[in-house]
Image (tube, rainbow over all chains, first blue to last red):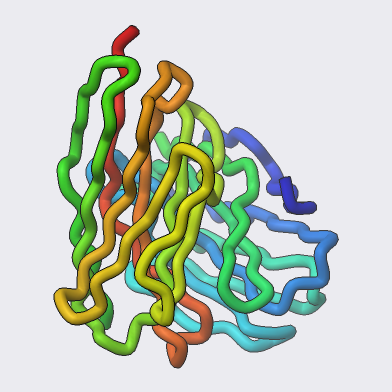
Length: 110
Length: 113
């Protein structure tokens, strides 16, 4: 597996609370991505980054923000978590084409 | 934007049979098509990919074919084994999209011993 870690791996939180998920890579890849995976929807892109401080929205970005202050770290923030954001979140990294996925974070919003 | 459709959503085969999963894409500018395998509770892992200048690629029991004119590509698994049971995702990437991938919704493959 590529050098990608995600933290936390599991989290339970309450509606309305802020949540930050972290993705860390040791591969020095330029591109980083956040996806959510839900039954029947496959993998849907939330936000992605093409360099430090350079980010853009994906297809399901509402309710999420991201930051990338260092090449190795990409943070996903749920400003005010809702039950619809209960999901498995995957980070991915890429040099140009091939994307490699992190182990995932299971988030439950009660 | 790109739209990827994947069929079937579930596929059950007997061990030793072949399995075929098909995907179509909408954007003729897409030029890179990876396939991922995801076992239960694990991360998606790349198993094979193909670029638009190639029509077919093989890796042992796995092959992928691409028809650019029809905008579809397929995954072929021969001599299936129980450990092939997983969810398989196809994806398409367009060169100008910042390396973004658009995924199909996945196929649950079950190989029965």
